[in-house]
Length: 215
Ligand SMILES: O=C(O)c1ccccc1N[C@@H]1O[C@H](COP(=O)(O)O)[C@@H](O)[C@H]1O
Image (cartoon, rainbow, N blue to C red):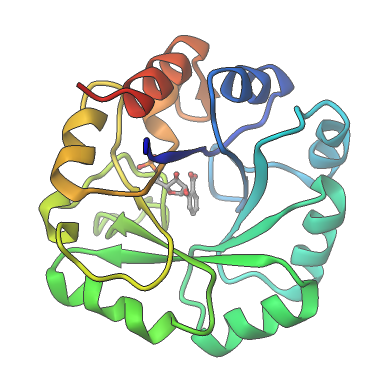
């Protein structure tokens, strides 16, 4: 079965439509002010009725408060909440209970010990997302840095939740990433952009083609 694919950091309805037509399973929207992909609440409300139906909608947050989550859930009719900061398992459980939505917890990975951290989230999150650790630079974001970790770290891991491979994926490296990691789902942002925050229709289509039919 081909991996499920999330195209993240969408801001324009035409990019969401391109992703949906090309076979994306999830559409991701970033609510983090420092990101070039940040969606303001005003823009989110405008976007809502122009989004395609079919793919599930994921809001991406970094150590959010409940007011932000509530506004974004309402604005975009979200299906999933992705926590991409230093949130605790207890906080993830509270979010699930409060909103009745699925939670994806992003985990930063550099070594196999970071992958083993997954088990802390069993019973608290509905899916996990393994992303590279952010570079140690002042301007680095918690995610969306176009940085990969060694995909082989995931191979043969017994992860008891659905999981996404993320970080530095591109149309050119995704077939190798799938082979190396056996990932059941993939998440991409920078690799389908022409500039930070600007999605490329050609790259979205190329990524989905390569991800859904790896050689
Ligand atoms: O994309 C962002 O700007 C972002 C900001 C804050 C937290 C998470 C963010 N993105 C997530 O990171 C992955 C990997 O990004 P990339 O493909 O390496 O650019 C992305 O898909 C989002 O889930």
